[in-house]
Image (cartoon, rainbow, N blue to C red):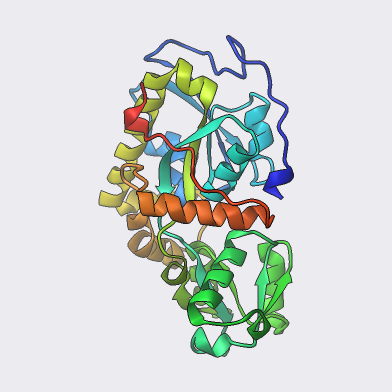
Length: 317
């Protein structure tokens, strides 16, 4: 649980933990991402191909992490910025990691309710069913609970089965041991393309205002290099707008570099790429929703997260 996590912080100052490289206008920035080859992270993970920081003087180094290790990587002074699930980042901050959320990456709650081909034809028909989740407090778990809440189901109207990872969820869906699960659009589109699954509904209809993925920056780095951070995001969001205007750039990365099915890449470009944030703004309603999802993920009845530590990147001083 996030509430039980503690972070041993590396020493700050002029060394690695403080991110003290270069001057206020140029320098190194180390970005850790939580999922390898994740399409919403494409502008960072394929930054060299897309020219994200070309001509900026920035030396952006991308580090591969995982959702469970993001906090420790940041605390250990190995990264300055995290690009990960917003719930994870805020839960880490709540647990004592000195980070601040400064921008959204994907406000839209990109989770789809997926059933096997020939399964239920509506979310209402899933009442009494067995839903697979990776684990308690996961985005999929939250999506299902919010869906059940909106549909007026009681806890006795559905079952949850923790399976650990997407491979296990797919296998359980195919065998019929679960009736549905939720996952991001890349996997949902892939399952529809292969004929193994079908999307019933976007979970965003039930979750409402929230933030799925965001950027969090170590407070020591924010204090030392606010102009450097702003330059990073100016270039990042300019590139988001570029690939939204020229989606073939996105498709080429997905298909040629990341080996995604061309039909799935094309569908992502049409349906999900336009939802990437173009400025990083997080509304008050989204911050409220994010606080709710963090409280849910911590899974401690004594804990209620009322606010999110957020400073918009353009307002850094």
